[in-house]
Amino acid sequence: MGATILVADDDRAIRMVLNQALARLGHDVRLTGNAATLWRWVKEGEGDLVITDVIMPDENGLDLIPRIKRVRPDLRVIVMSAQSTLLTAIKATERGAFEYLPKPFDLRELVSVVERALSAPPSTPEAPSEEPEEPLPLIGRSPAMQEIYRAIARLMGTDLTVMITGESGTGKELVARALHDFGKRRSGPFVAINMAAIPRELIESELFGHERGAFTGATGRGIGRFEQAKGGTLFLDEIGDMPPEAQTRLLRVLQDGEYTAVGGRVPIRADVRIIAATHRDLAQLIRQGLFREDLFYRLNVAPIRLPPLRERTSDVPALVRHFALLAAHEGLPLKTIDDAALERLRRYRWPGNVRELENLVRRLAALYPQETIGVDVIEAELAEGATAAAPLDPATGEGLSAAVERHISDYFAAHRGALPASGLYDRVLREIERPLIVATLGATRGNQIKAAHLLGLNRNTLRKKIRELDIPVARGLK
Picture 1 (cartoon, rainbow, N blue to C red):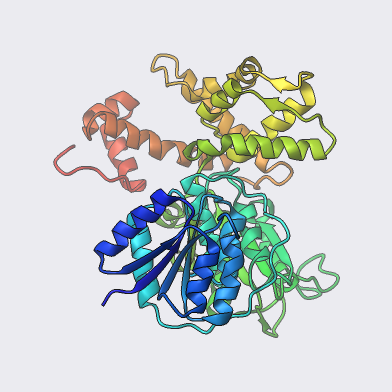
Picture 2 (cartoon, rainbow, N blue to C red):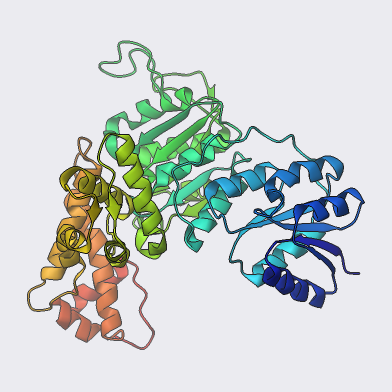
C-alpha cells in the first residue's frame, strides 16, 4: 500500500516533478504552494510524510516543523531548500527534520530518503535544543560543501569519534568547531592540540598530564589536554604526525575510556569527544608502519573529507565577499572584486586552499588603493601561483621545481615556530616519489623498462621502489 505524502513548495515545476516521481511508486501525493494549507492538512491528521520547502510565500518551512512535531510527533518531515547554508542544515536537524536536502536535489536520492522515512521505526522526540545565534564561518553552496553541512547536522547530536581529512588550508578546525558548537557538548570546552607542533618527548605529557617528579623539570602536577577538555571536545590536529608511543597510549584510551598521567598510577576517566584531523594519507602511513591500523579504525568512526578549493571553485565569489567583509570589520578598507577578476580567481588552482584565498583578500585590502580590484591586479598577484601550476617542462623541470618550492613554503608557513625536530627531507621525498612513479607508469602504460628509462633509474631500483611504496602494477606489464 502506498503512503500519503504532503508536498509544500511554491515552485510549481518542483511540485510536478515530485508528484510524478512519487506517484509512480504508488504513493498518493497532495500538493500545495503554501505553508497554511500544509498546516491544515497536518492538523486534520492527513499524510504519512511531509516534504516541505523552506522559503514559502506565507511562512518559513523551518518554523512549521516544531508545530508539526508538537501535534504529530511521529510524522516525518523532509526539508528542501535553495538557501543551502550550514545554518539551514543545522536548523532543519535541530527542529526535528528527518532529512535535509539542498536544491537542486538528486531525484533518486530524494526517493531513497522518502523510502527510509516511511520505513523507519517511530522515534522518541527530543526537546528542541537552543538555536545557534549566527552562522559559522563555513561558506559555500557547492554540492561538495552541502555534503559537509549534512554530515555536521547528522553528527552534531552524537558523541561519535570523527576523522576529518583534507589538504592544508581547507578548514578542518572550522568543521571540528562546528561539530562542537552545535553538538551535545557545546557547554563544555573545545581544546585543540597540533601533533606536529609538540616535541615528540612532550606529547604524552601534553595529552595526559604528568605528576610531580615524572621527569626532569616536572616540579609540579601538570594538567593534560584530556583533563582540560573534560565534558567537551578534544581536537587532535595533524594526527598523522603523532609518534608511535603516543599512538599506543591513545589507542588504550579509546578502548578503555580512561588514562593515567605520566608518572601516575590512578586511572582517570576520559570524558571527552575525540575529533581528529590530518592532511596526510593515513593509509600510506599504515603501509609504511608509521601509523597504527587499529588506531585508525578507532578514530575513523565517522569520516569527513573536506574538498580542496579547486573542487568547489563555484564558492570562490562567496568566500571572497566573506573575507573582504571580515577584513573591513578589522579596520581594513572594504574592497570590491570585479567580475573578470572573480572569474580569474575561480580558474586558479589554489594550492593553499581557502587559507591562501583569505590571505590574498587581506593583502588586496591592505596594499591596493583602488576600491574595485580588477583582473590586472589579480593576474599580478597570482603570477607566481600560475607559474607553479604550469605544465611540467621536461627539458627544464621548472614547473615541478616551482610547485615543490610552493609546497615547502606552505609547510613552513603552516608550522612556523613549531617545526618537527627532524625528518623533513625524508617526508618531502615520500610525498613526491610515489606520485611521480605512479604518473610515469601511467604515461608508459605500465611499461617498467620505459618508466625506468624516463625516470633515469635502474630497472631493479624502480621495481624495489614499486614494492616499497606499494604501487599497483597491471599484470603482464614489466
